[in-house]
Every structure is written in C-alpha cells, then in structure tokens.
Length: 378
Image (cartoon, rainbow, N blue to C red; front, side, top):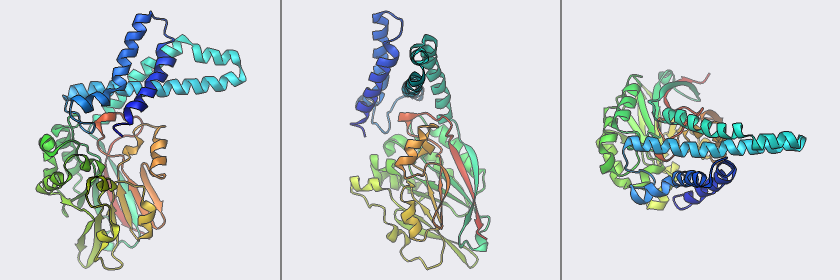
C-alpha cells in the first residue's frame, strides 16, 4: 500500500490540476503555485513516511496532523466533487449541449466546489477526532441460554491510538465505555498505531477499562506493522485478555457462553500465527453458543457455516464517507456497517471509535462506542 499510494494520489492530483487549477482565471504563476501546494498535500503520506516516522504513524504534533488531515481531506473531496460535476455535466450534455457546457464551465460552480471541499473537510476532520457517541444495538442470539438474556457487551474497535488520537482522547473513550456498566468489554483490533514505546502513554488508559467479566481483545492488521509481540505483551500488561486463536468461557449459574478470538490474516506477512478458527474453538463442548471476535468481517459466511452464533468485527470504519463507503462495502464482501444476518449467525460491524490518521475524515459515517444487549431468540 505504501508504494502504491503516491501513484494513486498523484493521479488524483493530475485530475485536479486539469479540471480545477488550469481553468482558474488566474495568472500562470498563481496557478503554478496552487498546483505545487496541492501536489505537496497529495504526497502527504510520502513525506510523513520518509521524514516523520512511518506511514502507519507519523510522529508529528497533533495540531500539525489535524491541519494536514484537513488539507488532504479537502484534496480528496475536491477530486470527488469535480468527478461528480463532470459526470453530471456529461449526462446533461447528452440532452442539451448548451446546458452541458454551462455545467462544465460555470465559474461560480467551479469556485464553489473548492470552497465546499474545504468546509466539508473541516467538518469531516472534526467528526473523525471527536469522542464517539454510544450506539445501542439489541441482538437476538440463536441458542442463547436464558441466564444470558440481557447480557451487555461494550464493543470498542479501531481505536488507532496515535499522535492524532492521544492519551486524553483515549481516556475520554474509556470513561464513556466504563459508564455503560457492561458485563463484558471487547476490543476487536487496531488498538494503536506506531511502536509500543512511542504509544505507551496513549494506550495506558485502556488499563482502566472495567467490566464484570473483564476485557477481551484481539489484534487487528495494524498490530502487525510495528513489533507485534511487544504489543501483545503491552496489552496483557494493561490487563487485556488477548485472544490469539483462543477462547474463554463465561458462566452464569449452570449456563455457559464462549467468546473466541482470531488473529488477523496480516499475520502471515510477519511470521505470526494466521487466523485459525479450529484452534480458537478447540475443546468447546457442543451446544455452547460462541461469540467470535474477528477484526475483518469478510469471512463471515465461513464462520456462520462453522456454527458461530454472533461475530463482532470492525476494520471498515463504516466506510468513513457516505457514498464512497460503497467501495469499502464491496471490498469487504458486502459488510461495512451495522447488523447483518449471515445464515443463522448474526454479524455486527462497528464503525469504530477512531481511525488511521492518514485519512482523518468522517462524513455521514459516525464513529461509535457500541453497547450490545443480547437477547434469547424466540
């Protein structure tokens, strides 16, 4: 991804150059200066990767990351708005050439698109970094013992602790989660970006999470990008029960509920154990309902065939932007946000509490802390 991204953003820059900068009624020097500034913004990831840490976690002050995120978001949104205008203008042109030319060459609309991109990006950046609201979801589980009817799970996912989402943000998320008074807290991957020594303070509030049956977590793909084994040790030191292709049993009287967790398939690139559902379920007695923590939702059909009752996932961030979220949905086999029925299994995909700071933008796909209430299916 790191080697391809500059070419993708470079192609978008060429499109913005031709369809926005070049038609501006400015002097050549002014247009060239704007084109250069937009080029620097387009290559934001290349510069941070080579000079300020890594692609996953640039080590820059939060204020700088916010400004860069806003500028990069405006660049992407401008490209999308220009594309919408050009497609709409082309369709109108097929009906009326005069009206089509007016849409494609209107100066007022042209400048308005630039201003709109800047405003939408500011809104989207604020939505990306604010402390998430709580979203409550009731899920009926096949075979859930009556003793677990009303059982409350708080799900966190995609926290992405970083210089953009630092200790103060994490502490606020933890406080809001603890206020739910959940029976169990689960974290479905991508807890932090960067190396453990750089993020030690930012993840420290996770040690304050409290639930009657503890806190269980699994790795996401981002855990593997920087010293995976040290991250697992750091999370366990904070009191998180890390499920790496394993399970735990939760009992209420004579009733039992299993919570299993998988590693992420990114593990194979780093010589770590790949996701292994058989290993995660090994030793379970037949008939015990299983809640599976799997960072990515795309293998839900396979997990449903294995008899999983409920899968909890993240990874998609809900697609982050309404409209383009459909691409994220397609990449993840139709799963992007919310509750799904996959055979007899239920799948819940959370929008996530945080996001990767390389695209700090949310529009119409809000972040969330999820409160899940289990019900016995009638």
